[in-house]
Length: 83
Image (cartoon, rainbow, N blue to C red):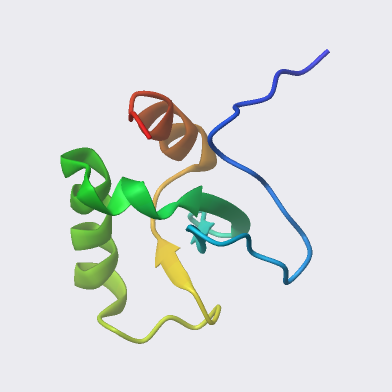
């Protein structure tokens, strides 16, 4: 039996609700997450974006922001953020 994190949606469609954006997370195989825009103001999330910039620059091959960390790390960090 799994659990759901209310602030992170894992989607496979191209629909992104207003106030959210898509990020691709993973070290090898990328998984798409839709996260609230409010995360952009959070220092922990800004650190993740800085790491993504260092690794990928401004070219993101998946078409969205690619974050180079494991899914578990991403879920752990975002579970600590307030919306």
